[in-house]
Image 1 (tube, protein in one colour):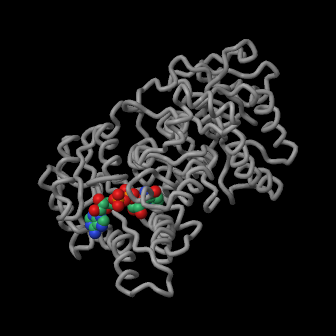
Image 2 (tube, rainbow, N blue to C red):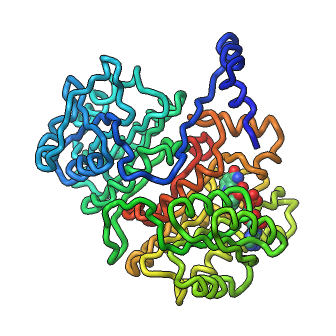
Image 3 (cartoon, protein in one colour):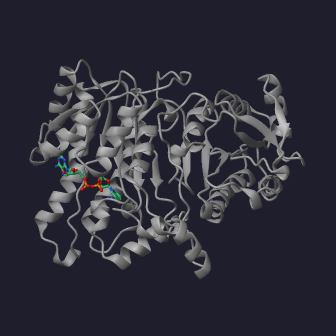
Amino acid sequence: MADKILEFVHSSNGKAIASALGLPVPPKLKRAEASYPAKSLDGKNVLVGAAGQGKTSEALVKALDAMGASLKVSSDLAGLEGIKESAAKAKVEVGISQSDNGIPESAYVLDVTGVNTVSGLRLLYDFFNPRLKNVPSNSRIVVIGRPRGESKSTEEEAAQSALPGFVRSLAKESGKNGTTANLLQVKAGAENGIEGALRFFLSPNSAFVTGQVLPVVGAPKGVKVAEFAEKPLRGKIAVVTGAARGIGAAIAEVLAREGATVIGVDLPQDESTLGATMSGIGGVAFPLNICDPSAGKKLAAVAKDKGGKIDIIVHNAGITRDKMLRNMKSHLWDMVLDVNLGSIVRCNEQLLEDGLAENARIVCISSIGGIAGNVGQTNYAATKSAVIGYVDAMSKELAAKGIAINAIAPGFIETQMTAAIPVVTREVARRLSSLSQGGLPVDIAEAVTFMASPLSVGVNGATLRVCGQNLVGA
Ligand code: NAI
């Protein structure tokens, strides 16, 4: 489903007309065109700062250097104090920003894990304020703080709790030109998860993720944090449910792009569409109703046929059967609950018995509807909300087994499902976001691939919204 307004305002005539009429112009988002390169920030200037010398700033400097970035500090040196020693230790050069002379940075990363007082929050102002008038389109802003409950004093807790509000507001102020702003809450001891997370959040792969807070809590037991390798999913077997079309097909494509062998699952009546999608990516089509009571066992068997156990399972299949609760027939309640939730719980139970590879990664698809609720969607929203609690609860159990489980909550995504929404409601849903447009299936696929890959090694039990900071459920 195309966004005609977005296409129009970016056509040569459309631009002039929109500007003459003073119409808002949704930004053209720059998305990834190929798999993750090792030097993803090669030739790019990144403005960097930190509140205090420590493990986070060391990990930050090393990560940016590994990605090929040129590290810069502003001429008034805001945040230099915290990274000076880390840069010297890592033998990484830090230059003075030339942005006032027309060479702006395209990424801005500030580590404020060391902020433990209200006055320390001044660094947020000093670091960003001089820069924000000249941020190039599609830039990336990442702030690094600590998760709740990690502080040594109540003032520190208050200072760290300022960060979600700050970042969400900055995302709203910066979205007009496609710039994103996100907060990584890195637990002390989980610093080795910073590089992977930055590879996603500083890349075009996260074009539709903004205004989000993602905790980085540490790798599951026994998982080694390896150096980045191109095609990080090479040799992995990935199962994607609901893979014939829409978001599931895009997830299958992006997982395959990063090297995975994909087993695509969809309803037997969609076998030919599924076959076409899978043959396009060298994947395996496996027609199966995921509500089959032994679906998990059947998936384990098909993976065994392909030579191994399942490294990645993406529970994407989902349905809506919308009706006001007072008019909803019980079979519509039961059907939505079973496809969107019951099947996931059953399937994982069976796979955990003997179907998942060592250090497997599980990704579930939730929805912002599960966060905000929707008229006519009590059944759907209940399942999508349940998924958020389920991944949180399961992560605690699975971390000890070396397995991670996370969820992605899509916002308004341009698919057949959203094309069916009445035009006015659709237009409102699209524009009420910081990026003033709907996302594409590939945006969900990129976030799922991040959660399915070693890039998210420190992330477990989280739900990441991919919604362009939609106001729904904000
Ligand atoms: P879609 O309807 O285009 O695709 C869903 C796929 O799942 C279909 O191919 C369908 O045949 C398959 N499926 C349904 N029941 C199945 C079953 N019992 N066994 C096997 N396969 C089954 O939907 P779309 O838009 O691609 O959504 C994918 C996921 O993203 C769903 O979980 C949906 O709830 C979620 N989502 C979508 C949003 C959007 O804006 N499109 C927003 C929020 C969440």
